[in-house]
Image (cartoon, rainbow, N blue to C red; front, side, top):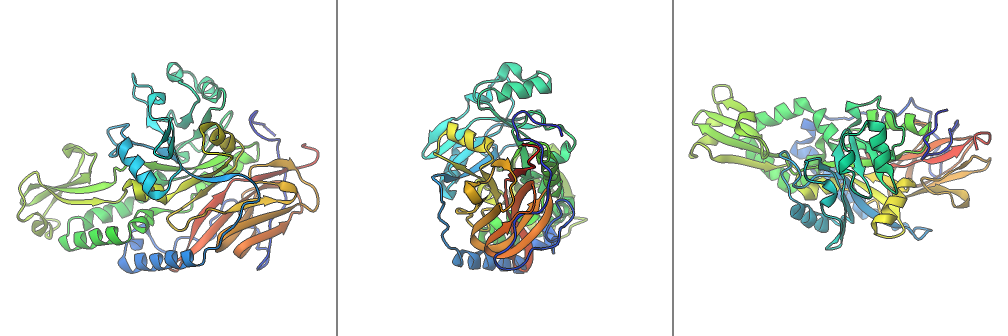
Length: 458
């Protein structure tokens, strides 16, 4: 098989992890979700469903137990693909995202400034600021890049050469927005996004139209405003779905080499929806980063309730302002947890390359303590030959449906705090954890793999 020079030898496969509480489940097709969504994103924004989800989140928190790590690594809460003050479609500033990171408990922010020559994105915030570690980088040319030093003079190089330039030293480079480039080669890359918040929004075209309609009714505006105050995290997460296309790309890639999966928070603080009065019968609807000419024009002829919304306001007034993605909610929405020796940039780069990483929707529950490894000191991200008797282990601080995947297919399913499985052959093994939230199964956590290679391949 083809090999990435930065990654492991090719792997063949058979099952892995099974059971402490139930029994191994049937093998599924590649990267299928454990369950399909029960409700649409718009249905998830109804009060009764948001209330039920919050009740589940509160109940989970009460069932949390401590999981002690058996190594000296620190579980550092990181956000990749974070934008602040870097483009016309970014609504937030670096100062704002720093305040939010401190409030939420984020340890590290991997910035992803849009390339804006003559400014060099490596001149952005770097190092510790009020306890939060900033690592500069960019979203450019279809990648998230975090080079060790400036690559400004190499931004127009052919892609293979550009990738090599970013990789120098301990540079990191990830394939971004997989839905836009599913067939892009993985040669030389550190890894890829395995979840992207923006992709969820792009898939919810119908829900966005329905939201626009709700913004033209004063009663529904009052209702939405109250829901955002009471359930900000669940509202933002209403669009979240199993990232099947991303995981299929990842599973295919890890069959050929080592590739670290990270979450794309893709936060901009730009999902602040506005209704602006044009005249007594007309409004503009858009977001805080839209110009008037880019906003949607809505007439009271089609939405009669709009007149009540505009009444008493002057032309040009903002009559509705609903903030769906304050940085606090965005940073809680999805995180990349990195198991590193210390909170320093070199230690983070080393751990990410080693695959000591898992992705979690932290708004559901704090995943700190999650661990995936096995016998003889095997840890998440490790590569070694498969030997008979190798046991894989999962520990969770909260009860969940623990799903073991081998080469992209489910081979075991347990319910509880832990899972044990004696492997029967080589393969690339990763773990998913799912919660029942308000009567709907939803994915919570995705681990990076353990790579168990065939004896002849090693």
